[in-house]
Image (cartoon, rainbow, N blue to C red):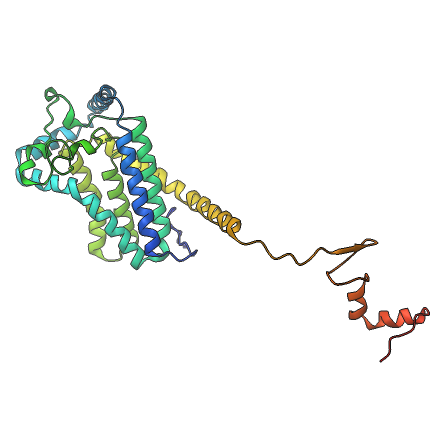
Length: 310
């Protein structure tokens, strides 16, 4: 049975990629993502309304897993503190590490996987812009959620405002909860490790990392269950669109290269006579044909034209 590539992770045998071009590109995309999160703050009251609507919908369907998880993480520091470290740091460490590993070990699959990740991140940014959402930890105390990062802030570098270092909470958008790109990026890492890892330990990590990340984002009250579902959905959209984005990038690159290429030197205007086209330097039509066909010379001589001396 023939094997088929997972869409978005096909082998891309195009221009060889270099780390000194990839690194600035990734930093640029991440900078745009961070700036976009800050610009897409939205109205606080609307964000709270969106958060409460999600919570009511989950409760109606008995999907509010974040409530019992948050109580557990708040009650048990041996769970809550590692979860806070996990939430504050791993998506900044694991995702780049998987990218670097893929670039070095599976270079033929790197470009498609990188495009998938960046496309999904872009759609996540659209979600932050269109649907600013108050996370559970910022709802009023009457809803029963505890901000575990504020609760255990003495254990880590973060403050009581967000997962950013102390004093820098104002530089983050705390209402960028829908979708959860913590879960989305973890899912991307898991699929890449499962698909290209090869060892049993790698496959265990591929399954455990996104599942544990989903539990962490809910238990720390940073995301709703539906935020995690939306993070998975965004990665699915990015996976489907990544091949088209790749083709579009190739087409744009080809056009730019063509536009930047120097124009060919002018070889001179052709001389046109009586419907015959000659090259530059030729004065008599069919000059090349006469040179290439000796029998034509003989025919001309038979018509009364002196034959050329031999």
